[in-house]
Length: 225
Image (tube, rainbow, N blue to C red; front, side, top):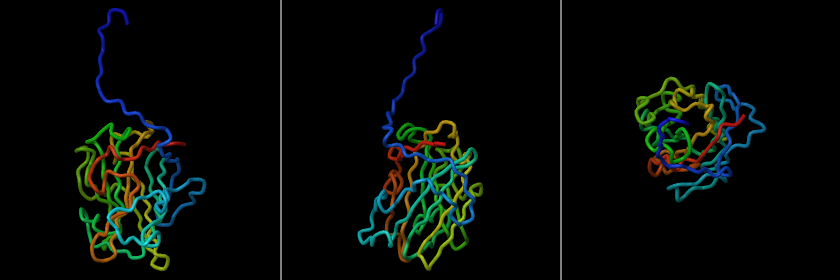
Protein backbone atom coordinates (compact mmCIF):
# COMPACT_ATOMS: atom_id res chain seq x y z
CA UNK A 1 0.00 0.00 0.00
CA UNK A 2 1.60 3.30 -1.03
CA UNK A 3 2.82 5.51 1.81
CA UNK A 4 1.97 2.88 4.45
CA UNK A 5 4.35 1.43 7.02
CA UNK A 6 5.36 -2.23 6.91
CA UNK A 7 3.43 -4.55 9.23
CA UNK A 8 5.20 -7.57 10.72
CA UNK A 9 3.61 -10.51 12.54
CA UNK A 10 5.42 -13.30 14.37
CA UNK A 11 4.24 -16.69 15.56
CA UNK A 12 4.18 -20.42 14.97
CA UNK A 13 2.43 -21.88 11.96
CA UNK A 14 0.65 -25.15 12.80
CA UNK A 15 0.02 -27.35 9.77
CA UNK A 16 -2.89 -29.74 10.18
CA UNK A 17 -3.09 -32.89 8.07
CA UNK A 18 -6.64 -32.89 6.62
CA UNK A 19 -6.71 -36.69 6.86
CA UNK A 20 -6.18 -36.44 10.63
CA UNK A 21 -9.13 -34.09 11.24
CA UNK A 22 -12.30 -35.68 12.67
CA UNK A 23 -15.57 -34.20 11.42
CA UNK A 24 -18.21 -33.23 13.99
CA UNK A 25 -21.58 -33.18 12.25
CA UNK A 26 -24.36 -30.71 12.86
CA UNK A 27 -27.13 -32.44 14.78
CA UNK A 28 -29.18 -31.20 17.74
CA UNK A 29 -30.03 -33.76 20.43
CA UNK A 30 -32.54 -33.89 23.28
CA UNK A 31 -30.77 -34.32 26.61
CA UNK A 32 -32.89 -36.88 28.47
CA UNK A 33 -30.61 -39.90 28.94
CA UNK A 34 -32.15 -41.71 25.96
CA UNK A 35 -29.89 -41.65 22.87
CA UNK A 36 -31.35 -39.80 19.89
CA UNK A 37 -31.40 -41.23 16.40
CA UNK A 38 -27.88 -40.48 15.18
CA UNK A 39 -28.04 -42.68 12.10
CA UNK A 40 -25.77 -41.45 9.36
CA UNK A 41 -23.16 -40.24 11.83
CA UNK A 42 -20.28 -42.63 12.46
CA UNK A 43 -19.46 -42.78 16.19
CA UNK A 44 -16.03 -42.90 17.73
CA UNK A 45 -15.75 -46.60 18.55
CA UNK A 46 -13.68 -46.82 21.72
CA UNK A 47 -13.20 -50.55 21.20
CA UNK A 48 -11.14 -49.87 18.07
CA UNK A 49 -10.26 -46.17 18.19
CA UNK A 50 -9.54 -45.86 21.92
CA UNK A 51 -6.35 -46.54 23.86
CA UNK A 52 -6.41 -48.35 27.21
CA UNK A 53 -4.19 -46.67 29.80
CA UNK A 54 -3.02 -48.09 33.12
CA UNK A 55 -5.53 -50.99 33.15
CA UNK A 56 -3.24 -54.04 32.85
CA UNK A 57 -6.12 -56.44 33.53
CA UNK A 58 -8.54 -54.82 31.06
CA UNK A 59 -11.08 -57.45 30.06
CA UNK A 60 -12.04 -56.08 26.65
CA UNK A 61 -15.07 -54.10 25.51
CA UNK A 62 -17.37 -55.76 28.07
CA UNK A 63 -15.08 -54.46 30.81
CA UNK A 64 -14.92 -50.92 29.40
CA UNK A 65 -15.81 -49.76 25.90
CA UNK A 66 -18.56 -48.14 23.90
CA UNK A 67 -19.46 -45.53 21.29
CA UNK A 68 -19.25 -41.74 21.46
CA UNK A 69 -20.82 -39.10 19.20
CA UNK A 70 -19.90 -35.41 19.20
CA UNK A 71 -22.36 -33.14 17.36
CA UNK A 72 -23.17 -29.44 17.36
CA UNK A 73 -25.49 -26.62 16.39
CA UNK A 74 -25.23 -22.84 16.59
CA UNK A 75 -26.01 -22.87 20.32
CA UNK A 76 -24.26 -25.94 21.75
CA UNK A 77 -21.75 -28.70 21.38
CA UNK A 78 -23.35 -32.07 22.16
CA UNK A 79 -22.00 -35.31 23.53
CA UNK A 80 -23.76 -38.65 23.32
CA UNK A 81 -21.93 -41.63 24.83
CA UNK A 82 -23.09 -45.22 25.31
CA UNK A 83 -20.43 -46.70 27.57
CA UNK A 84 -20.26 -50.41 28.34
CA UNK A 85 -18.90 -50.95 31.85
CA UNK A 86 -19.38 -54.17 33.81
CA UNK A 87 -19.33 -52.32 37.17
CA UNK A 88 -20.43 -48.74 37.76
CA UNK A 89 -18.70 -47.03 40.69
CA UNK A 90 -18.58 -43.28 41.30
CA UNK A 91 -17.62 -42.41 44.90
CA UNK A 92 -16.53 -38.86 44.13
CA UNK A 93 -18.13 -35.41 43.97
CA UNK A 94 -16.98 -32.18 42.36
CA UNK A 95 -13.21 -32.15 41.76
CA UNK A 96 -12.83 -35.85 42.70
CA UNK A 97 -15.24 -37.31 40.11
CA UNK A 98 -12.22 -38.32 38.02
CA UNK A 99 -11.51 -41.06 40.61
CA UNK A 100 -14.72 -42.88 39.64
CA UNK A 101 -16.54 -43.86 36.46
CA UNK A 102 -16.83 -40.64 34.49
CA UNK A 103 -15.95 -38.82 31.28
CA UNK A 104 -13.29 -36.14 31.08
CA UNK A 105 -12.74 -33.99 28.02
CA UNK A 106 -10.51 -31.14 27.01
CA UNK A 107 -11.07 -28.59 24.25
CA UNK A 108 -9.29 -25.54 22.88
CA UNK A 109 -9.98 -23.28 19.93
CA UNK A 110 -7.90 -23.75 16.80
CA UNK A 111 -5.36 -26.37 15.87
CA UNK A 112 -3.55 -28.63 18.37
CA UNK A 113 -0.61 -26.72 19.82
CA UNK A 114 -1.87 -23.31 18.71
CA UNK A 115 -2.89 -22.32 22.25
CA UNK A 116 -1.18 -24.12 25.13
CA UNK A 117 -2.81 -22.22 28.02
CA UNK A 118 -6.36 -21.30 27.01
CA UNK A 119 -7.79 -24.81 27.07
CA UNK A 120 -10.81 -26.15 28.93
CA UNK A 121 -11.13 -29.38 30.90
CA UNK A 122 -14.48 -30.73 32.05
CA UNK A 123 -15.76 -33.84 33.81
CA UNK A 124 -19.17 -35.54 33.55
CA UNK A 125 -20.37 -38.09 36.09
CA UNK A 126 -23.37 -39.82 37.62
CA UNK A 127 -22.71 -39.22 41.32
CA UNK A 128 -24.59 -40.13 44.49
CA UNK A 129 -26.20 -36.68 44.16
CA UNK A 130 -27.14 -37.11 40.50
CA UNK A 131 -25.47 -36.03 37.24
CA UNK A 132 -22.69 -33.50 37.76
CA UNK A 133 -20.50 -31.33 35.53
CA UNK A 134 -17.19 -30.04 36.90
CA UNK A 135 -14.64 -27.69 35.34
CA UNK A 136 -10.95 -28.14 36.24
CA UNK A 137 -9.60 -25.56 33.81
CA UNK A 138 -11.57 -22.63 32.46
CA UNK A 139 -9.67 -21.47 29.42
CA UNK A 140 -6.69 -20.20 31.39
CA UNK A 141 -8.81 -18.01 33.65
CA UNK A 142 -11.68 -17.05 31.33
CA UNK A 143 -14.14 -19.03 33.44
CA UNK A 144 -13.79 -20.11 37.09
CA UNK A 145 -13.02 -23.68 38.06
CA UNK A 146 -15.73 -25.57 39.92
CA UNK A 147 -19.20 -27.12 39.45
CA UNK A 148 -20.99 -25.97 36.30
CA UNK A 149 -24.73 -25.30 36.17
CA UNK A 150 -24.93 -23.92 32.62
CA UNK A 151 -24.39 -27.34 31.01
CA UNK A 152 -27.37 -29.66 30.50
CA UNK A 153 -26.39 -33.23 31.43
CA UNK A 154 -28.33 -36.47 31.72
CA UNK A 155 -26.72 -39.76 32.73
CA UNK A 156 -28.59 -43.07 32.99
CA UNK A 157 -27.33 -46.49 34.04
CA UNK A 158 -28.82 -49.80 32.87
CA UNK A 159 -27.51 -52.57 35.10
CA UNK A 160 -29.10 -55.27 32.94
CA UNK A 161 -26.99 -54.31 29.91
CA UNK A 162 -24.09 -52.78 31.89
CA UNK A 163 -24.50 -49.59 29.85
CA UNK A 164 -24.13 -45.99 31.01
CA UNK A 165 -25.55 -43.34 28.69
CA UNK A 166 -24.28 -39.75 28.86
CA UNK A 167 -26.00 -36.91 27.02
CA UNK A 168 -24.68 -33.36 27.26
CA UNK A 169 -25.52 -29.99 25.75
CA UNK A 170 -22.80 -27.41 26.42
CA UNK A 171 -23.32 -23.77 25.34
CA UNK A 172 -20.47 -22.40 23.28
CA UNK A 173 -20.02 -19.73 25.95
CA UNK A 174 -18.53 -22.49 28.15
CA UNK A 175 -15.69 -22.78 25.60
CA UNK A 176 -15.13 -19.04 25.08
CA UNK A 177 -13.71 -17.51 22.98
CA UNK A 178 -14.35 -20.34 20.50
CA UNK A 179 -16.87 -19.41 17.81
CA UNK A 180 -18.52 -22.28 15.90
CA UNK A 181 -18.06 -20.23 12.72
CA UNK A 182 -14.30 -20.77 13.13
CA UNK A 183 -14.91 -24.52 12.74
CA UNK A 184 -11.55 -25.84 13.99
CA UNK A 185 -11.53 -27.21 17.56
CA UNK A 186 -8.90 -29.40 19.24
CA UNK A 187 -10.79 -31.97 21.32
CA UNK A 188 -9.76 -34.95 23.45
CA UNK A 189 -11.66 -37.16 25.89
CA UNK A 190 -11.33 -40.20 28.12
CA UNK A 191 -13.52 -42.55 30.12
CA UNK A 192 -12.37 -43.21 33.68
CA UNK A 193 -12.67 -46.72 35.11
CA UNK A 194 -13.46 -47.70 38.70
CA UNK A 195 -14.86 -51.10 39.64
CA UNK A 196 -15.54 -50.25 43.27
CA UNK A 197 -12.17 -49.89 44.97
CA UNK A 198 -9.91 -47.38 43.20
CA UNK A 199 -9.54 -45.78 39.80
CA UNK A 200 -8.07 -48.53 37.63
CA UNK A 201 -7.10 -46.25 34.75
CA UNK A 202 -8.85 -44.92 31.68
CA UNK A 203 -9.77 -45.45 28.04
CA UNK A 204 -8.88 -42.43 25.92
CA UNK A 205 -9.45 -40.97 22.48
CA UNK A 206 -6.59 -38.62 21.85
CA UNK A 207 -4.30 -37.65 24.69
CA UNK A 208 -3.22 -34.70 26.79
CA UNK A 209 -5.55 -35.24 29.76
CA UNK A 210 -5.00 -38.43 31.77
CA UNK A 211 -1.22 -38.75 31.93
CA UNK A 212 -0.60 -34.99 31.93
CA UNK A 213 -2.20 -31.79 30.73
CA UNK A 214 -1.01 -30.96 27.21
CA UNK A 215 -3.53 -29.49 24.72
CA UNK A 216 -0.97 -29.91 21.93
CA UNK A 217 -1.92 -33.61 22.06
CA UNK A 218 -5.66 -33.01 21.58
CA UNK A 219 -6.85 -34.38 18.20
CA UNK A 220 -8.04 -31.87 15.64
CA UNK A 221 -11.77 -31.74 14.88
CA UNK A 222 -13.80 -29.64 12.44
CA UNK A 223 -17.42 -28.56 12.72
CA UNK A 224 -19.10 -29.73 9.51
CA UNK A 225 -22.71 -29.33 8.31
